[in-house]
Length: 340
Image (cartoon, rainbow, N blue to C red; front, side, top):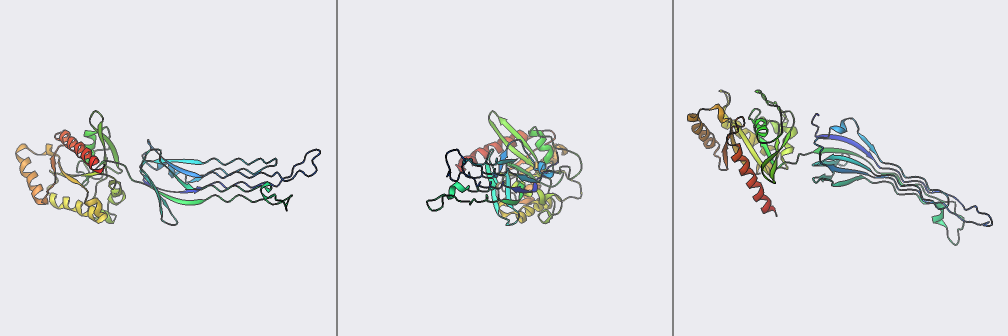
């Protein structure tokens, strides 16, 4: 299924039902009086976060969602049927914006969380409501109020604990394949990954975290170059970033300059994101001889003036990945404790 992370829809709540004008007609009761019932309330439109949904692809074909209208009131004080609410499932992590006002209406970050986005119309009143001592035969009723209508923009931000960043072909997809059951496409050319992939990484019984493989960034991504601007937002919910660097790039590449370019793009997109905890992961050790590894890795770390944690791995062979995942799990557990 194609990954869709934005969609525009129209939601229409049901109108309230009209109140009835009616009078009792019974034998031996010449002045029965009014008995017109109220109408029914219109149904509302509600968005509900559901697990099992990973994209907004379902909204490509169905873009209008309308709840039921309330029924008309009837004689004998019978109330019209209320319209059923319409519940629209969306992925967990969906933000809802009003297109016309640009207001953020809600952010559904928990399974089964709900947000009412269009209020159903209020029921109309029957003529029995208007009976009084001075007006014993009212012929007045009210129509139901119209249901709320809105144009909405849905935006999906993936919920992941760890995000992978790096240039195209840095080995992000290979790493997530090595440590989880996710199977993103892997090939020997850049921009193999065209949409984010999520993988659950298990490091023991009841110990796991979610890793997001985001399409590769390039210089100028924050201004729209490449695929990065479309997917950088998916990193905003992560608690830890792993910056993957290819230690054996093509001969004409400057590894340090390329790594700094990624940091610069993060800073331009969101200073808050750039300030998030970030670890350096030197990947593709399998392409270097044992004699070359130390010198190459040390040169990259020194060139970046890196002060944080550094890990040396090979996503292809699995070397160092277990140690990396263990350290990530410990960090997430400790940071969760600090948040509490």
